Amino acid sequence: VKSACLFAKENQPYPEVPAGSVRPVGGFRTEDLVAHEQSRWVGRVAEALYNVEVQVTKRGASGSGGRALGICLFQVCSEGHSMLDAVEKGCNQTSWQEMCPHFTGQKVEAGAKVWRQAEWLTEMPKFLNKRFDGYKSLEGTVTSVELQMLGVRWLDSW
Image 1 (tube, rainbow, N blue to C red):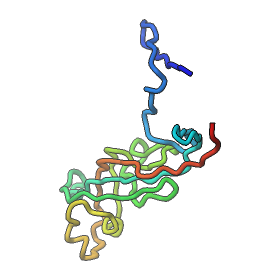
Image 2: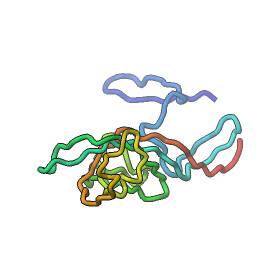
Image 3: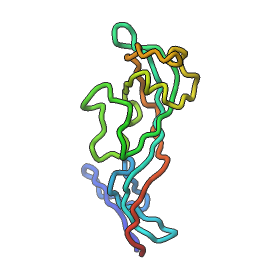
């Protein structure tokens, strides 16, 4: 079966594009249909596991700016609650359909205990090793989100 997609552009004819070359703009969403061509099975996306990399900063005294402290990694599951909170609500949050609550460029914050539990790709700041919880103003910027594992509920073969 040969199929094509047509895209509109102002005052121009629709170009024909092979349907196989069109991909979703975002990542997987819950209940998306997927197919495994080798085994010839079709299924729905059930859950996902992501690696979320964060560049951590300590806010300045005025609440803006900050000093880079290092880079760490969190594993975030689509079924669980992320330990990182969005700094700004609204535009800094994902939609309810997204499987990962974080995206590149998002500002996040958490208490010292959460940062201590992260996998640090650079050296963890020394003051976090001392179990000092006085640093409630640690925040970071998500630098990458990478899908690690995708759970699929297989429905049928074709």
